[in-house]
Image (tube, rainbow, N blue to C red; front, side, top):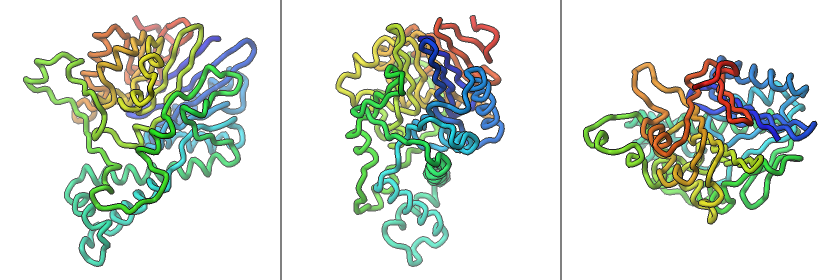
Length: 368
């Protein structure tokens, strides 16, 4: 059952085109679609079309939106519009009433930012002060609102395509390929972070959907004294947004080799499963969660994974010269634990991984 994985260079975002083959049966899967950028979208469309043409298909058999952050979902809207009526099915979580309520209040807060204290209600007043005085919070509020609206646009663009909300307990898997299945989150874990019900919200609770984490590499003397693995946290709590924590995690098993696709999952996204140590042990291949952010992975998990090969999708250096993601400690710890790790930023279009474990640059020259 050969597998082919193309991890497309979409900067700080994710877009994976996966081809699964079993005898004469072939499935094409797209996991996430990159951020709001025309060049990125064209790149994803190009790689997807080349794959579909080779497999003689009119559209992808499965589209997965691991979570509705803009850098994962925006490109999927364009895919859904282009391949309208030709997408087999879609896996994605729909927003809970509780999360919808918080986004609605954040929208109200942002729209009245200049009139703080002038007729505003208590639910929006205190967050307004925080947003007004912290540009990072304002930026993330805008990001969350845009991402939330993009999710609704994706649902509309999918039209009559079957949408499944996958959880670990529901045994969600790809038709004819039960080996390609959702292993996280559990429904209870999802509801813990994105409650279904509306509740009375006090100001201190409203901004808990935000996480102000630039995650820029700052080298200090104390940092230099630590190994890469020692710099990784033991928990993601308070450092990763709820939407990221409930990312869909997919496992595929082929010839006793395990492949793991992780979205922007955090440490608890893996550890909330009772059997996580056995479930995620000894991986043949994995995607590094959240573009190599230091807050989403622990040394314990890397030791459990024992991944032979890992891909990290990240932009690398910014114009300022700072390194946001992938974090050096994440790359270093994977390397120290014996994993061969590749970065999409090193490829013009994509990195390719085949069933033999060969990794190539844009489908051509093999990496050493």
